Length: 535
Image (cartoon, rainbow, N blue to C red; front, top):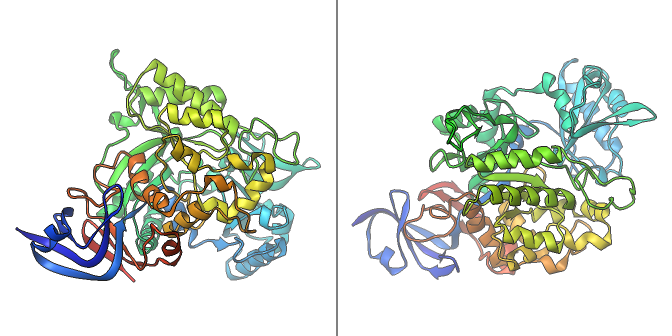
């Protein structure tokens, strides 16, 4: 047999337990042999990987690729650029001096916990850019601040449920939280498809350079995370043009689903036209779960909690979607065959979502549903056990601890720190935990994410919930097999085995060792056996 390629000169970590092999043969985009079996085959080309460690391609189970790509053109007001409110206003003023009057200044990445605890204000933005439309987006995406020129165009008398316009002494401060950001839709939504397609391309170039071969896009279409009602078309156009650079699973925003006309005995009652649901598509682009927002942000103190946030005895957060609606939407989507991925960070929201999953499964039993809780940020022991018992997949972000961990600690207080973005407890309970970043909320480089799952150090050096640390090997498994499993793709992706797709990354060090993980660099990335990036 003459195969397409044999990769040699490497330590190839194969199977569920990352067994080392010396070579890998690829034909038709799939692995056909490993070890000595591979080197004995004739090949169209033989590639010496120069002693690299080869692992499955990294897979981010929760990211916002288009949002990240579009953000590369926006004004960076994150910690790396702005350490104070004055820095933020100065950056806005500098951008205003470069742009024509009346244009938009869109900023990204500010975090009030790193700006002395205060958000930028409309009046500060007015002074910096009185003749421009200014919108500064919080790093979490769960809130934004606008100036008066924008605020005066908003219908503040009709704030959507599940959000609020923050006021001081009866006057709006410019801060729009959660669903109140939808007030900006008449001004900024929908985003042109060409802009989204370009963003997908730019993000994908970065992703393959970081060893990423697959991603799950956490919300397209209508709703808080969507860019346009026809967003899927941008991904199809990107693929047709060769600009979709990683395998992509799309979560469809719940707001994009609607009741469907069906025969009396059919159980497809809620979804996309023609009955399209989870699983539709192919190896490069497919429909994944329905994405539903239940609550808000921990750092922003808007997620739904059983007990108040530390230092705010009257604030227990709130739901973005009404509790009764959460139960109904989940039931209808589950009955119609969808995998459901529900954003829930606060412990009260997690309780409500688990109740909804349990009720849906009791009414319409379905094996191997793989419903998910995105973030699953603050969970006590009883609800953690329910996550495992119901077969729900928790999707926490290890990288959060390193970048926004101090804000999370401040919101919870020391008595609840141990419940924060748990990992070890989920694994011990029998859950499959995927690896994810929620990029661009934080830096989404998978090697950084894995290191943070191992070390769990906040920006101040505090180890957050040390009992929740996991091993480097477990972190690698999360970013490979765990993420593939979370989207029903483990038969093709997630491990390097004969018959699976030849998606892999060559590294300068062994990431299954904590020391090697810290030193590892991406040398090359391959998708379907074809090198798509070389350092």
